[in-house]
Length: 303
Image (cartoon, rainbow, N blue to C red; front, side):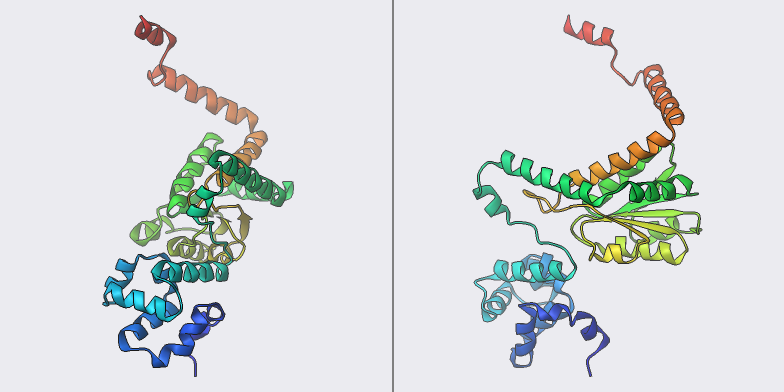
């Protein structure tokens, strides 16, 4: 009878090389069987780890990892890793990013990047509508607390969104993900609170868990993610799909930043007097504290 873990992974096993590994598992040498079991039970280890990391974690040498890849019909570890990563991302509802080598061979970086970014923005705005934007803004505007979290590059975006919300009078808080910081941050969450999770093309466990804990506490949850099939999206009350795959890098932050600016623009249009007052106060503070370089300083430096 299959175990609960086998049942959870059964969908992924329909993809190569997982089906091939299952067929050969009983006939593999002991160390290669250890690699095979890791591929089936923890595919992300091979999908995102170097050959040295995999060898060290599973207590085998790099040559064993290479022989395992070749036994499955791959030319080496990198081709096996690419196949595992593609299957992992496809099963998670995510699209694998293009190989950087192919991108660099394709011609003008500037031209391809411009086309890629324009397509991403088109996809973003085609999915958005006024009703969805106002629903999200209603949640942010009426919340007692707004917590924003993310991991990896998403953590930088989460901090940016928190700061932008401050500019329109929303007292948002950046919530570090993982461990004690998350536990402390979500203490006291309730129905009047909103938790926003920012994810790009990889579903980090801490972001998934944070949204799940927040929802269990009764808070409304908003997932900003690159795929409707992402685990980050599955536990959220509201989901906004934002293209998150890059061209030169595996991820792109531009569409997510565009979404932030759109939400901020809607919020600013709702409270123009408050936003104008805040901007003026900020400007006055910058000048009074000498935070902005004044023209006379520039003139003196030019002399």
